[in-house]
Image 1: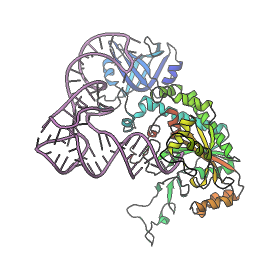
Image 2: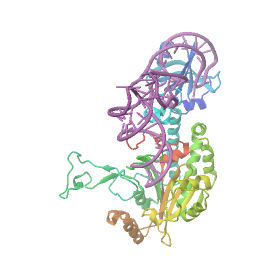
Image 3: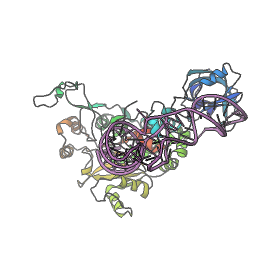
Image 4: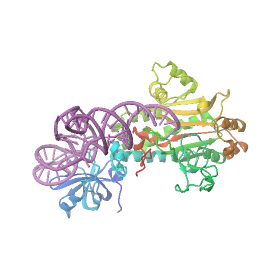
Length: 463
RNA sequence: UCCUCGGUAGCUCAGCGGUAGAGCGGUCGGCUGUUAACCGAUUGGUCGUAGGUUCGAAUCCCACCCGAGGAGCCA
C-alpha cells in the first residue's frame, strides 16, 4: 500500500480502506478526547479531514507539533464522516510530523489574506486555497494547449530564448552579455565593443518566437511555440509582466480566415478542457473571485465570437453613445476603453477585429488589396482586452522588403527571414496568446502577478 | 513613465494637532463531532524613511522609498 493523493481519496475511497497520505496541515481543531486536522497535499482544493483520537501514541506531544503549515504523514482507515461537510474522513492510526511550523512566526493564517500580502510571501502562498487553485488551473491550461495542438498534428518547437535579432519591435529588450561591467571594452569611437562579447554582437532575451516559428512552419506546415518571453518595459499594471509565457501557432498554407477560425476554436477548447478537468477550482473562483466566470466560460464555449473589421469597429465606436477619453477616428490604434466597449458593452463576448491600418501594425503582416490595411487580427475579450494578436504574414518578397524599409528596420539583418520568401514561399498565418492573460481571463484573477508562481515586474525578483 | 489613492500591532483596518486603538492571529484557560468552530483572559507598535512647521506631529508641509488602481506601451 503506497501513499495516495487526497484528491483520489476524496473521490474514490470507501469506508474501511486503509490509506496513507502526506501533506501539510491547514487547520487543527482540538476537542475533548480527539482532534480534527485538515490536511492538504495540493492535489485538490478540498482538504482531507483527519480524526486524531487521544488514544494514539504520543497524542499530547503530537498535537503541539501539528500547527498550520506543518508537514505530516498520516496512516489510518477511511470512515464515513459523522459530521456535515464531507463524505468521508481519515481516522488516524499513526501520524508522523516531518517538519513543524512555528505558529508564532508562520505567516499564513486560517483567515483570508490580501493578494498584496501574499505576493510578499510568494514562497508560501501556493499553500492557500486561491493561489493553489490558480496553479492547478494554470497547469490545466498548459496541458490543454499542448493537447489541442498535438491532436491537430502541430509540431511543438522550442524557439530560442536568447536572440540577436532586435527586430520584432515589441517593446524594450533585456540585454544578455558576458562582458565585465567593471571593465567594458570600447571601440576607438567610444562605443561598447560588442565584438568582444559572447556572441560577437549585441544579444537579448527574446520578445517573441514568431519569426523562428515561421521558419519551422516552412518545413513542418503547422507548428507552435510555448515558452517564456521577456519585455524590459517599465509597465506597472495588473496585466503586464517582465517575464511571461506566450503561445504562438504558425500555419503554412493558411490565410487570415483560417487563422481567425483557429483562434476561436482554440479558446473554446481551452475553456472546455479546464471546466471539465478543474470543476472544483472553477466553482471556487466563481464563488469567491468573480461571480461571472462560469457564465463567461459558458458564453465563450457556446457562442460564435463576433467578427468585425477595424473599419466597422471605428464606425461602431463613432455611433456609440458613450463618451470616450480618446477621440475615435479612422487610423487611430484602438485604446483600452475602445476595446472594452466593444467586448464588454456592445457584444458582451469576445470580438475578433481584423484588417487594421498598416501604419499601426507590424511590418510582417500581409498588405491587403488597396494597400491601406493589413491582414491583422486581434481577439478582444471582456475585462482583459486584447488576449490574442495575430495576422496573415506577408509572403511576397518585394512587398515585405518595402514594408521592412518603411518601418526603419535594417533589411540585411533579416536576410534569413527574407530567404523564406525566396525559397518556396507560401501564404501563412499565426497568432500569439499571452498565457498569463489566458489564466487571468479563465480564473477572474484581477492581477496578473497572482497567476504566475514567481512574478517578474519592475523592482521585483525576490523569489 | 504619467495620474490618483495608500503605507499605523504578524494580518485587515480605525484614529487625521494633545502623546496608540479594534477585529483577526498568537499564547493561556474553558467548552463542544468540529469544519473561517465557539466563550473568557492575555500578548503585541521607533505610526514607510529623512527633513521641516509647532509648546506639542501618526495627524500639517516638503523630499524620497515602497505598494495598489487607472493610463501609456503591449501579450
